[in-house]
Amino acid sequence: MAGNDSTSTDPQAVEAPEKAAALMDKPWELADQLPTFIEVLPAAWQPYWLLIQRYPIIEAILIVSAFWALAFLIRRYIISLVQRVTDRTKSELDDVILDEVRGPVFSTVFWFGVIVAAHSSGFSTGVFRYVVPLVLSIIIFSWLRAILVLSGVIFRTMSRDNNRFKRIDMRTEPLLIIGSKIIILLIGCYALLIVWGINPVGLLASAGIVGIAFGFAAKDTLANLFSGVFILADQPYKLGDYVNLESGERGKVTHIGIRSTRLLTRDDIEVTIPNGVIGNGKVVNESGGPYRKMRVRLSVQCAYDADLEEVHDVLMEVARGHEDVCAYPAPRVRVRGFGDSGIDIQLLCWINDPEDRGRMTHILYMAIHQAFADHNLEIPFPKRDVNFYPRDASGSGSADAPADSSN
Picture 1 (cartoon, rainbow, N blue to C red):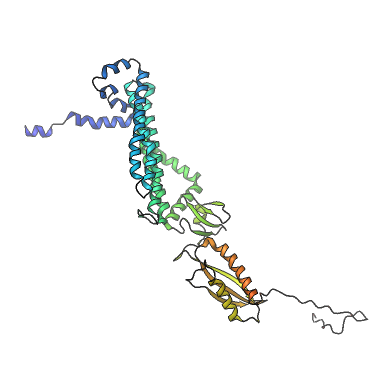
Picture 2 (cartoon, rainbow, N blue to C red):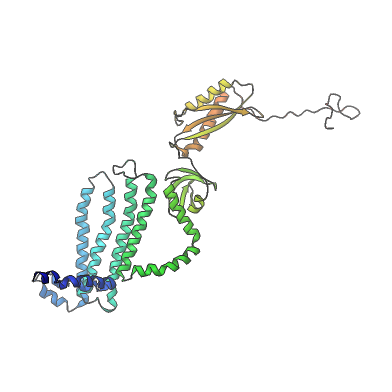
């Protein structure tokens, strides 16, 4: 008897996997597995509902209205109650999460009511059998949109320096955001295929040949995609950096995408560069290095008879007299050579942000010009002397004129 008990099987346990497999192939039959609306009503209400069931359209409208009211109450009172709790916290992350899930929760309850109404009213057969997968697709899309938005918000919050939830480096933020969105989209597409009874394995197998042809047709786009992945992994620059590209663009990195990178120039013009161009060119990151500071080189000239020690002190005074010039590293003055009109000198100083390079160059050049004028230091410029010699009576030229040495 013990042996017979060990080999006996429960019929319901055997039928459960078979029913699950059948629902995977025909998800529109899901409504048939749900209880009818009258079965969940109290026994005292059921006779009245039997009268309503004589009019399927009215029954469906009442069920949908009941679930709409339920969804409205959940959004109006339960979510609002939770929002009062989140308003007391210092973080804005919980507020953003609650705002994003508010819509999907309402949609899920309401559209589930549509499924129940279709089943209870008899509108789940024939043409109406596609109501269930269509409604489930709407629910999936609503949650998919919310999760895509929340994935970016969560990673951006975790990479902020002034946030107590910081757990990731800001430089890895774009890679994590893009990677998470790709995974979420893949899961969403898989769920949609299952809802409509499509086997994803067979679809992927048949898509192999199409993928090869698509790869040849979109090779430039794929090159940008792969370059975007390498840029995010190698991190030659990050958001907020000032970069100079080999193609001539200079600006602040405002967006690093999987296909392109956006720069905001000093003219407040946004430039979009394909990642394939950046990946195959030279990138000068002005914000890279041990710190964000940048050195500014100001080239000036002084006369040959000027006191170089005085010129040195005047330039150092100009650099130290401006609050936006860094005290460390300290500014310095260097003599670079002897020019045609004067001695070439450079003032080297550091500023806190590459964004201020143009403004600081303008201010310091004006200060240098004023300081040279206050100390009577000449800024030389090219000069040419032209001598005119009067001709003699014979017209052959003056005797004081130098002899022609061209021969």
